[in-house]
Image (cartoon, rainbow, N blue to C red):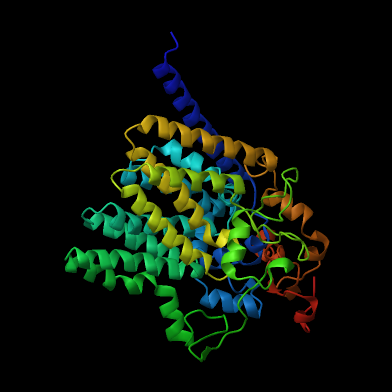
Length: 471
């Protein structure tokens, strides 16, 4: 007999199977497809190859800007990508740094907040930017997932006070170090979340733990401290100023927005981006991409990526949970998320949501966490799970499943279709040539054309090649 309990059991297994199927399919795609989004070939993979000794400096020479970035940018993500690449012998393995961060985050929610794995996986994969980044070698996703753990622990420390044991403190420090040494734009968020935990420890008179957290700061912020010592600029190679002091660098901070939002305050841009105003229609398979690029003159360039309807639905769920909460924990959580929202909304380029994926990750995570605390736990988990599953299926449909199944190129196919083999064949062993074909310049390097031996000088434009022979 199909009782209500049996129906719930079948539905739960269906949701688990769906989550496992989609994650497994993305893993298959990650193993087959070389990430071809612009930044992947432009600097993530070249840096990973250099750090892992796969393509050394005597085979591929960075141009001036990329050399400065290699010296100053946080490189933990690229180091891990290089290690995966080196171990497996496959450039595609670099994608697994982003992919594996998803189940690791879900496991953390399971252990810390008692959220079932399939609920976390569905909630995360329903976010378009999570799905598109899961099979790429961008570092935004793993960095923001790590930052989200720190933010969640900070919110918990004030909303549902309990002893911050050594394991929790180690988790906060470890995730903060991962985030801060992968993505510089997350430094403020990580610092404020750690500060909230620090103050909570002092308020609870746990001074030894507070001291341990303070002592870990150099580890967490290793990259900016290293840059400050070596270059006198914690964010080298960016040119910036603070309180009238100018920090020298080789490039200006990046800034881009649609023309109609060019003079709007960042919080306004952030809200417009959350609501996906002006981006491509649902009928366009490129509505959601890795970088949300659209023509500079368009109304939606760099906007969106969280699925506006899914954002509104989750905000309504959080408001409902806070309104009906008698123990006030949900209200404190909602207040903590409100503070977090205020911080994110004023960050540089906040409307480019891939930089601040942690906002949406924290939102779906607190909803899952609070749902698991409800007395009618099963009904709430069931509801948010099916909401996430439906949103995820819409994302897959809109993107034509391009990010879920292998739809790109293997390394062999890139070498065949993107590289001018005739030009490579004409290069003498021992020669030095200039290549200005981003984001595929790396694949002209000799290690991809063994047993050849020559040096490639990277360039962004033909004029940078100087006297070097140009391919």
